[in-house]
Amino acid sequence: MERKKLLIDMDHVMADITSQYIKWYKEATGVEVKRKDLLGKPEDLAFPRPQLIRDFIHRPGFFRNAKLMPGSQEVIRELNQVFDLSIVSAAMEFPQSLTEKYEWLSEHFPFIGWQQIIFCGSKKNISGDIMIDDHFRNLGHFSGKKLLFTATHNIYTDIEGYTRVNDWEEVRSLLMRDFSFQYANN
Amino acid sequence: MERKKLLIDMDHVMADITSQYIKWYKEATGVEVKRKDLLGKPEDLAFPRPQLIRDFIHRPGFFRNAKLMPGSQEVIRELNQVFDLSIVSAAMEFPQSLTEKYEWLSEHFPFIGWQQIIFCGSKKNISGDIMIDDHFRNLGHFSGKKLLFTATHNIYTDIEGYTRVNDWEEVRSLLMRDFSFQYANN
Image (cartoon, rainbow over all chains, first blue to last red; front, side, top):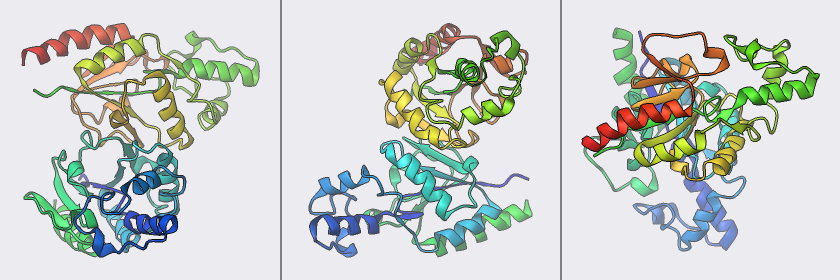
C-alpha cells in the first residue's frame, strides 16, 4: 500500500517570508509597512521601494533567519507519518539560499530527512498526488491536487481547480480527513 | 508543440567523478587504482579503503573541481536546443555539494539557466520523458525512457527496460535521431 505523495513549498508556507520582508524593510528604511497594505499585490511591488525587496532575497541570512509559519512544525510532523512527504522549494534563482534553506530545514524540521528535500528552479518536472504552494505558477504545472496556501499576494485571487487553505490548521483538517482515511481504507 | 522533457544526471554523466576518486585516492594514499580494477563494483567498495572514498564526497572541492565527461558540453549544448532539458542531481546527501554543484554548472554549462536545475534527495518525484543516469536506483522510479549511462560500477549489469549509452556520442546519435525528428514531425 503506497502512501500518497505530498509536496510542500517552503517560502510563505513553512517559512514566514512576509514577516521577514517587513522586518528587513523597516531596518533598511525605518518605514514599517503593514501587512494589510500588502494584500493582493505582488510580493516586491507591495513595498514602496521594490528593489530593496529584491535585494534582500540575495542577502546572506534572509532565508536562514526566517520565522516559522504558525503550526507548520506540528502539522508537518503529523503529515510526515501518514504521507510520502517531500519539501519542494524553488531555491535555484538565489544560489546562496541553497545552503541556508538546507540548514533552516535541519534546524526546524529535523524529522525530515535529506531524501525528502528538492530544491529546483522550476517545479514543472515535479510530480506527486498533492502540492501545497502559495504560487499559482508552481501549482499550474502540477497534475495532482492543488492546495493554494494563503499569502498576502494571492489573497484576492481564486481560480477554479485550486483548493485554498488559509493556515496549517486547515491543511491538517483537510488532509488528515480526506487522505489519511482513504489511505487507511485502501 | 511541446518539447520533450529530458533529465540529465550530473555525477558520472556530466562530471567525471571516477577520475576524481582515483586522483584523490592517489593523493591520500600514494596508491594509483586502475580504472579496470573498478569495473563492476560499487563506487566505494571498489577501492581498498572504502571509507576514504566516502570521506572525499563530503570534502570541500571534491565536486567543484571534477573534470568534465568527454563530449558532455558539446552534446548537452545541442540537446538544449531541441529538448526541454533539466539537470537533476541527487545532491542533498552532501549539503556542501549544493553550492559546489551550482558553481560547477555555471562554469562549465553557462547556457543552462537556473530554471533548468534540480537538486534533490531522491529522484522519485521527478517526471519527464527521458532520463539519463548511471544508477538503476534513480531510473527505477522513472516512468519515461530510461538511458543508463555507462560507469565503472554499472558496466556488467543490464536490466530489461533500460537503454545503455556508453558515452555522449551515443547519446547524441540516439536522441537526435529518435527524438528531434519525432519532434520536428509532430
